[in-house]
Length: 278
Image 1 (cartoon, helix red, strand yellow):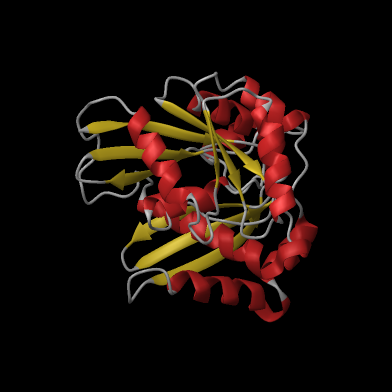
Image 2: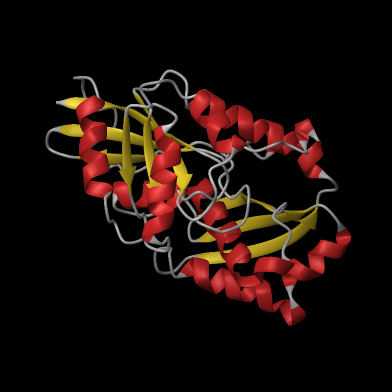
């Protein structure tokens, strides 16, 4: 029996969350093409007869411009320390740059490289990224797609082989340690990012303030009054669409109430970050 923790690290939007969901076999981390979508450590649990791997999704490492950005980098760095395996995720469709080299340099020589998004990259792009990644002189390299699953089985086998012998850390039927209220707030944020896309500031935050099944109240926080109308939409259209999409992912009978509030410049206020769990 092998068991342990595997942390995925990389720059923003390289495909970490999609890959985590594919490895675990179910959705445990929200996905968006917006920066800073993942804001905390999200753990998914891969259970097999011979192994249990706890797969940790992390915020993208970037050059911070706010207190939130600094917290996200700290979260990512902490997740990569004292784990059994680190996977450096590179985007096959993006040029290999200083940010990738910075992340890899902090991951240790035993780290594994996953070159992601090979489903939308050209063969030439994949080969170029693998060649660039080879300069890092890390332990192993795998071209993968979190969307189609191509190459993921090979990556998982390599990760399991690197885990030490040990007990299961979580029950067999557990796929994530994310609290349900937090997960619902994340689903709301994911749907808002998907519906409004370019018009919606990625600085929104969501939190469940009341949870007494079947009633769930979730606050959507923005930083300025001008952003409030964008999130609500004409006649409440955006909130309605987001709420409908989230309810489809919840057990039948859920009553989800969405409320938009202004929390001025919350990204830059440490106390606000702590209140939101960042």
